[in-house]
Length: 256
Length: 267
Image (cartoon, rainbow over all chains, first blue to last red; front, side, top):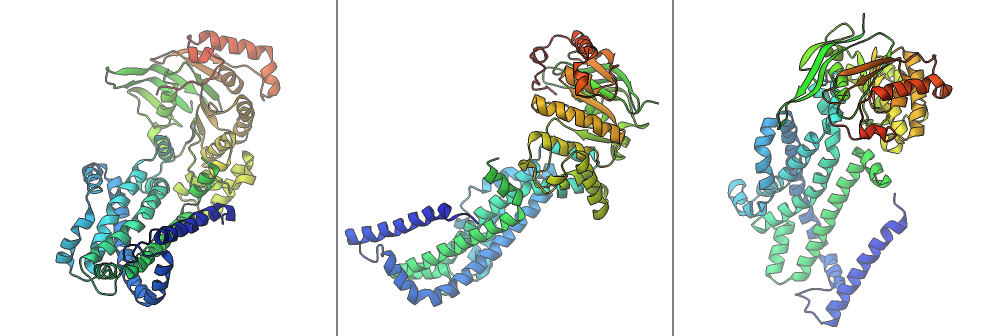
């Protein structure tokens, strides 16, 4: 992997940030319910982690299900749209426009449609991840250069072969850019949807109910868990990207 | 019978300011085993002519025969391999996977494909780089990969569209020699588009000089230099005579008079 001197500064900045946080809370004697110091959050986490772990797994399950549906659907519909350009031309403007719609605003309605259980959260996470994946993948599938297509024509490749051997691999880096961004979106979708109702043992409900009781130390410990979870999710997808798109990693390193 | 026969071929592109005539009444017959270069000022339609032979562009008029059939049928039969000015390698494929692409498309079994690819990479001297990705190779090496790929299906015809135009002079001269070796070993007929007079004369058995837009055949120069060509060929007095002869028939064009530097071609 990367040498220590690449990630050590990053860790250093992180430690410095924690130190600064501690210092500010101490220097200005900020009330603990407004902003607890990191060591207070860490101490709280020691008590809350059994509940939080269960809640986190539940919420992550919703996020992952929505992620899989949204990203999978996005790739499938993009594949269809690349095959039928007229369809793509019709759908793409709406897809791009929808990217600016605050989908979490639909969360209360999703509960009306899909119930208080995981269904409504999965629906929101799906919606939030579908459009970025669709737009990114389609851009990759259609962004193939004219010479590459001429080459395929010169060797008498079928449309099917052009798709599998040219369009799809060309689109993979675009897809993974979307996949990475969607990890965060899926987490946001699941957690925020839970604010509008869900089982007690879920991150969103936990954060909302502790915050409304001014148990902010507990809220912060849950936020920390959500952060770690989101980061792990992101890194996992990045790792898969390295395996699936090895040429891109090498190119980036060569500065091409 | 000619392996490539063009009869009164013309091509007109529609444009916002009215139709643009790229080619006008071009007739040319290329015999089996010949090396024919097309040379002319930028925008004279020489690339278009090559693309018509390869069935990548449809002619507006005239008759085209490639390997005894229409260009569409010849393309579907993989009668030709093509090399562009850019290598057009797929960045997600290693060198060997790029060379094997045409065989993969036909559906050759893996083992035969591997053998064929190894032989082709030896032919272009890149056997040691078969597992490299394109970005790890120099421009000249990338173009060698493209040539190996064009030869994969052992086509009767090689179409080359300014294949060495983006390379430096030294690499270009070395690849010129390598290309002649490859042609001797494969017996392929070559149709070669270039901006460089010296390159055209050095490589070809005939040089076809085209006029500026619309492209017409100005003159066909028979190159009677001894075979096989070598480094020494470039020093022969006859070589300079032929270069001068071709230059005289080329209609003045700033991109060419500037030491044959390739300019951005309008297609």
